[in-house]
Structure formats: C-alpha cells, structure tokens
Image 1 (spheres, one colour):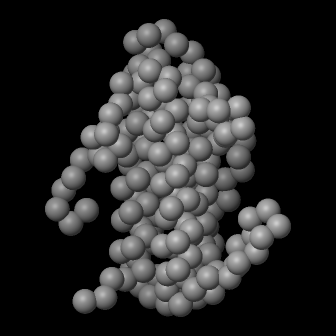
Image 2: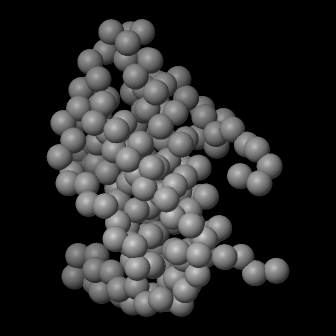
Length: 172
C-alpha cells in the first residue's frame, strides 16, 4: 500500500498546529494565573541567538502552509511576520489551520514528484516533492514546534510530553 503525499503532510501539519494551539492556550492560562505579562512569553527565547516564541510560531505556520504552496498549484496565503501580541500569534495559528483544512487529497495528487527548489541562505537545493516534505519541511516544522514547546516549558508553563504529543484518536 502506498502512502499519499496528502496523508504524509496535511494531517501531520494539522495535528501539530492544533497541539500548538493547545500549548498556547496553556501558556495564556499560566500567564493569567501567575500575573505574568503575555509579552514575556511572546518574547521569550531559549538562547540569545535563537528566535523568540513569536518567531517559532511564525516558522511553524510558514513551513506548513508553504509546503502546500511549493508542492501544489495552490497559492499559500502570505502572512507577514508582523505579529505584535500573543493574541496575534494565536490568530496566525488559527488562520494556518483554516488554510490547511481547505486542501484536499486530489490537490496533492501530483505533488510527490513536483520539483521544489528552496534557498536557505546561500544554499539552493532542488528536491522531488516527497523528498522535500520528508527531509526538509516536516523536520523543520517539528524543530520549530518543539522549540515553541520548549520555550513555554522553560518559562514555567506546566506542559509535559503528553501535551506535546496531544490527544490521540485512531486514524488521526
């Protein structure tokens, strides 16, 4: 049995984004309970040379929606990285989820073999669609999702492994 490009990507991205949304809700609840300004979470980072929480959320969003745009004929929405508040980060996650929910399996029927060229700094690389998803987009998505989780945890938000893994239901 072969696995479709759609099933390799869209359910994975949606699950991760819904988990991220729940993590952000826990962050909000923690900040409210402890009287911590949400700006402190918004700007928190693990190390001086790493992006803050806001940048991690932006990268999770961009990686998932741009993976669709790069592997299909669907134009991914452009969200400028100009969020200034925690609420705007939460809204960005919701908008990304809403976009991905519009993608259908047939939209990605040819995407596994479609050439995807990306530039990272001075490096440029061309992948076949499935290779791009499996060796670049999905690992990058989870790097930034994990880092967002780690930032929240580092800031005292009571999250653990089961929060990161999220609820499980058969077929999801």
